[in-house]
Image 1: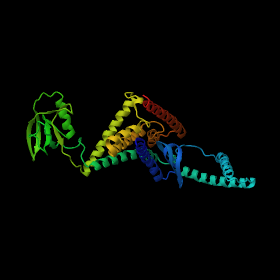
Image 2: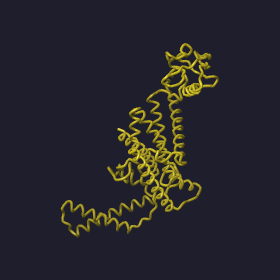
Image 3: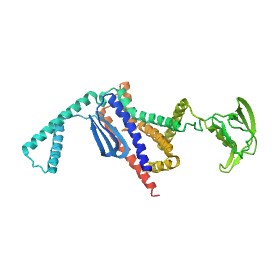
Image 4: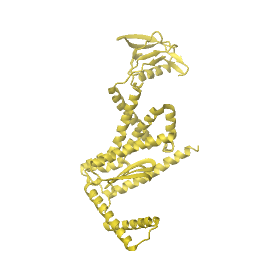
Length: 397
């Protein structure tokens, strides 16, 4: 199941990312020759209008081929020479399959007819590229197209976070108010704390949430010597003070208050606010991970790549079901978004580096830029192979 869920999750993330590029390119009337999900050989493809929509064998990426993105000079004679060879070969194969006798005169006429059609189509295509190709557009429009993929990743992560909060309908403990939902029977706080009590402070330190309260109790527990813990409580709209002792818990291997949280339903506005807060937390966590990788604090062999990911996804599903899969979707979406923003040639961030200076009138030779992106692509392929290698070796350790 891990493999299936991984393909579905990665497929959705890649689809949304590439859809961002595709939709904005189409909006700015840029010609798009292919919209592909996956890499490698085509498994399925269909052409609609000028665009081929394809699914490829390896679910490790995708691409939107926007015409005019790779600067190249069109030579009609060269095109005719290459095309006539292709048409001749294809036509011979067709006739051999049908066991048809090749009539030289008819064959030449058919080749010429197909060549004329191909030339007309190519000239129309080149006209569109010269008028609306990627590099004919303003820096602003190119910037929007390049940033759109990452934007879709971030928006989809935010939507998934909101959905996750909506499914449970309950405030997460890090945002829930420190309100007592139940007092355990063996708790020393029984008789002093009541259901619906809101804990305002612990030993004079204000408490902001249930998680904050738990962290403060945990800190006290580390050097606890059976002393009273002073609690300021809001009960029936009146502030009172209670001195309670902590209770040793065998399961927790430490001293606890011995109370349970009161489940609190989240409002629409709270869901929106928490979605953005959690997105920010995940974003910072990813940046820390990237920094540790770049600085060498985390070895590349410790990374989980496409080979090891299905195992993690399967374990997550076994422990947390579909909610865990949504969390994985969120984390990978943010990770892919941030990774694509890195200033590495061939990635969206690497291409943005060459667009931003144009806002200030600084232009870079397009052929030089494309060569730099080609080097970046080779670097990324090598990096992927290294990650896959370490991924595979983990299975034999």
